[in-house]
Amino acid sequence: MAIRTKNKVIQGCGLHHIGIQIRGDWEPTLRLYRDVLGMEIVADFVGKTSKRRILLMDVGDGSFIEFFAPTADTPSLGSPAANDPLTHLALATTDLQAATEHVRQAGYEVTAEPRSVTMQDIRATVSFFKGPNGEIIEFFQTDNA
Image (cartoon, rainbow, N blue to C red; front, side):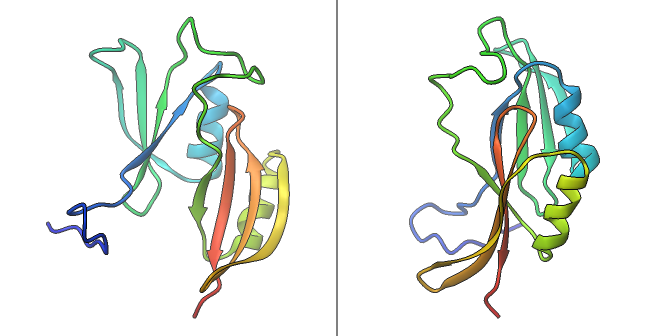
């Protein structure tokens, strides 16, 4: 099956997955990503090299989020970590208002209320909320027709 891509430099380039380090217990992460956001677990295994649990979840569009079990060296929730380059992950939606209210009602902190943004020719509406590992999650709805 051929992958559709606009990238002319890297053949078949597209987003496969984003990796998130679990900080603490698995349950808050599963509650948000599986139960609240409706993502499906497609792989749950122990890494050959790391010897720790790894969980791969299907976002719904063919891309994935990979979660890694904490190790003895994993910073606790709220602690600074030198290896946290992820500023946020963005999830596409066709109903940003409903998605934002859904996570708010599920008890997650909305850190930025829905607002319109323009990035050159891209018009969108965005909102942000905080996940159980301290990760920031953005809902992104393209307003372009």
